[in-house]
Length: 181
Image (tube, rainbow, N blue to C red; front, top):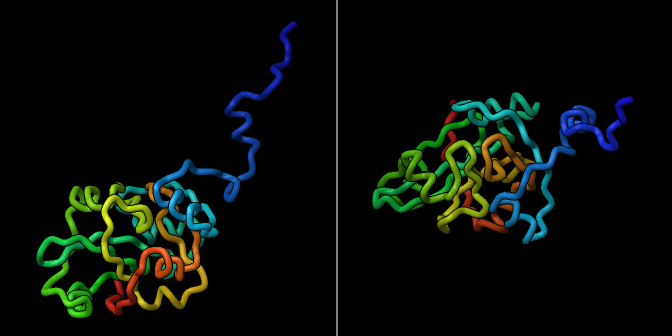
């Protein structure tokens, strides 16, 4: 007579577990930094889609794309890297940004260059825990939101935080460079 296993198989255990907030994602340099600074955050894992961007993650998680913030690694005319935090449904006016930060020009980094500067893969770039310390600029209207979702340092993983954390931890400077997509 077959004996009953003492503990369910891994698949059975996973099928019976509650969804959403209980799903734990392993630590990243971003979540380590947030925890070290005692920042309260919520975890929001989702199915990553190549080139899906903030619009996709917002749709999957049921958030307004305006509150899902994308982390963009850009560079000035001297190839000095910088981070821009922008609403998920807006583009960056590089001309306006350059003017506001006193640069001649600003352009997005190539993916491999962005990966090298941030230490993260494009699509999983967090402004927290980057490999290089870079100046951070945040679209001013993001700071008026009560809560945002921002990348937690891995593709398919966002964290929910108070946007003021970007100013407090990163020294993010407000700019006005959003363009409708």
